[in-house]
Image 1 (cartoon, rainbow, N blue to C red):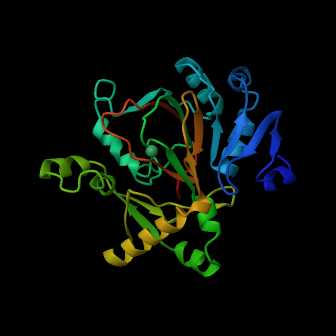
Image 2 (spheres, rainbow, N blue to C red):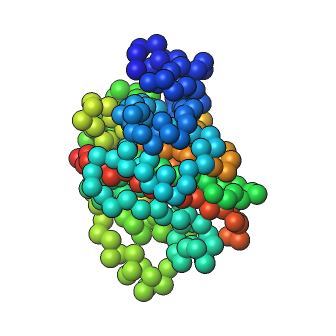
Image 3 (tube, helix red, strand yellow):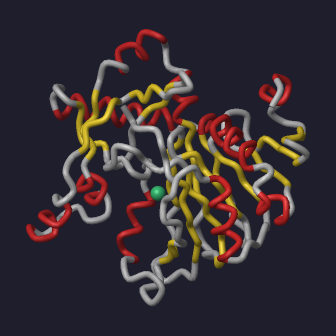
Length: 283
Ligand SMILES: [Fe+2]
């Protein structure tokens, strides 16, 4: 990718022969590609690079089959992770843990309970809700870059304690004792507030699992975490994907937060998600 492509935010450019259209100035690009090219793996390195640069790469009405989505995901992967399709739906017949996915209605990064989070998620739309169900992404690299330098330096000294139960309280604010014990089977994970990636770029590690700041009063930590979430989810850092059936969207989970816009429990919405394993620890 050359310098003019890096700075172009409106007109279409080319990525290894594919048409690239930047969807907002700071996050998300659409790529126009045929199935055969994508499945061949010839452009997978370019897609990974674009993902890291732009956070989100979207393909309109690609209509991959289950098998094709798995094949495509494998072309993006670097590890021997056991690839599989996860069905994201509120329909209890297709997803026995339907209510659990309501946690996705709140800004989060996947895998903050792990030391090495997944690199990317690949999601395709099979059925849509008539109301809501869009997916929003926030660029946590850009959000960090735009902070004043003095604030960046201060934030780089801080560690955040992430807890599974913190994210679950958004959905179930009054858990039973048994429910709480179940959540607490996940041990808290203390992570740097600012992720210094091996590329040299830095991103914020916040979202719905962030409980408090290590060594800081609970209220003070809550104030800072809420302020940073508000900052990182301002319109200039956010892309909202309005789905059509057959779209396929990939996001760099290491440099973005995401959330689904709420949709009714009895909605038909069905998304198929695959994931590309990560190989870079938070710290
Ligand atoms: Fe998620």
